[in-house]
Amino acid sequence: MTLRAGLGIVNPDCGLQGTIGLIARDPLDQSLWIVSCCHVLIRPPDWSGQPAAASEAVEVSGAPGIPCAWTDAVRANASLDCAAARVAGGVNVDASIAHLGLALAPPANPEPYMQVVKLGAATGLTRGKVECVDATGVRIVIRPGCAGQLTEPGDSGAVWFDEATGAPVALHRRGNVSGVEFSRSTPISAALQSLRLVPA
Image (cartoon, rainbow, N blue to C red; front, side):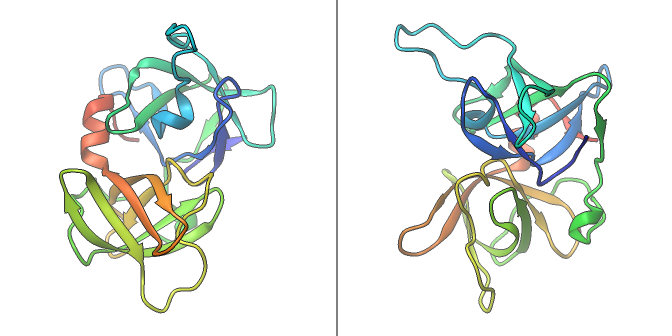
C-alpha cells in the first residue's frame, strides 16, 4: 500500500468516504501525515456530547481492517474543515504529484482565474478555475469546455493544484451538485498552518 494524493480513505468510526489531499510532514519531528477534511477524518462528538477518541484508525477505501494512518484530535480545525492523520509505521508514501502530470511546488495563494486541477477519489482528475476568494474560502467552478462532474461525495479532502506550477492552493471541502456546480474550498496555506505541517 502506498499513500498519495487522490487516494480514497475512510475513518470507519466516522463512516464518510474522502480523499487524501496531500502528504505532509511535521517540520519539528519529520513525521509524515495525510491531509484531508475534518469531517472525513474526525468523528464528531456523540449524542451525549462526548468527543471522539483522541486517535482513531484511518483506512484506504476498499481495504477494511488495515490502518494506514491514525487521527490526532489536536491536528484538526473544524472551522477550516481540515485535519491530518499520522501515517502508520511500515506504510509507504509517495509525496509527489507526478501521477497528476505535475511536479509539486511550494503552496501558493489562490487567485481569481487561476486554472486548477484536483484528483478526487470519486471523480478522478477534474479541471476547474478559481472564481473568487473571500472570507468564506475559495470558490472553484468547472473550466469552460471541460466535461464531467466537478465534485462528488467522496472528493472531500482533495487538493486543488495550480495547473501551471504544481503548487497546492486549496483543500476541497464541499461541492454543489444541484444547479450550478462549484467547489467550496479552504486555502491550503491556512489549512497547513493550522495543522502545523508543510508539504512533504
